[in-house]
Length: 285
Ligand code: CAA
View 1 (cartoon, protein in one colour):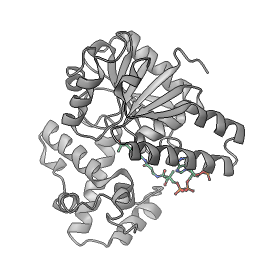
View 2 (cartoon, protein in one colour; view 1 turned 45 degrees about the vertical axis):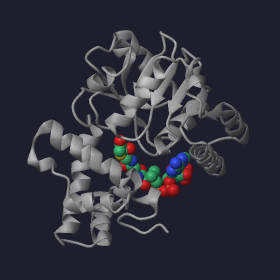
View 3 (cartoon, helix red, strand yellow; view 1 turned 90 degrees about the vertical axis):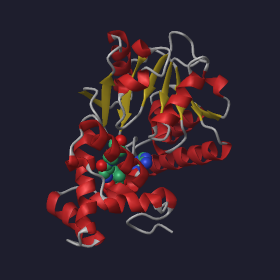
View 4 (cartoon, rainbow, N blue to C red; view 1 turned 180 degrees about the horizontal axis):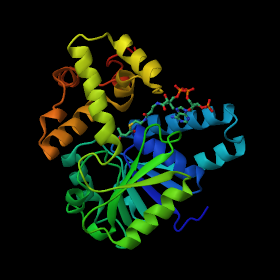
């Protein structure tokens, strides 16, 4: 598979950042994950290790390739370590203020020719680009969770994205053996524009007492052949992320059909964020 550069930086050692690091290392890129907290990096590296080991035990990966991929991944809490990167993918919290702060710290460190991408699942690429020093070398590269399993990546140009940036991103994503779909820069792009209102509707279905958590998930798994029920999927994505995507849809498209369900708001306010916090629609403790 063609590789047009070697060094990939990832900002954020959460489930998306680690998933992207996982697939990039398997494709032979040297990956550096930056996060503020050493503990988050250690936990992220342990997750990658576990997921690679799972692929070995499933017969999807050789032990040799697992070791080679792990050897290509390192973590850092020093943003200056992003200096040699050819491409940096920001995969921090789905919060525009946080992302803007990261770009302000990151841009002065990067090589002028380096590409910068965001894994945002909903925010305007054009607006995020304006918070960088390189809107023409900035775009959205949106992976799906769990990254090692899901085949799709959405590519989204901002208004200033140069064609050469887009072409390099395409080559990069293809080298990861993912399938590309191109979306225009509208709130939540394609996948989440469709998926999140379905999840929000499932939460309304629970809120209005139409069915229990189990009934709703069983209905959609067995009645619509979804691999996970919508409430289980919401817990998997993270209820805070689900809420912020619904807010972006509601604000950006100004249509009441995107109103976040009050029960979703309440769960997030309670700190019930799904699998990552131990409690959401299901109890993981
Ligand atoms: N890393 C590596 N491999 C993984 C993995 C991970 N994190 N998670 C699961 N797998 C592998 C398993 O090892 C297993 O491999 P084999 O087929 O070789 O046995 C395979 O994936 C299936 O996993 P499981 O048997 O454990 O469980 P499952 O059959 O229930 O599948 C699932 C799990 C792939 C997550 C499946 O339930 C699924 O596809 N769910 C829907 C996921 C989805 O919709 N994602 C999109 C979320 S939206 C998004 O990401 C956009 C956004 O911005 C919010």
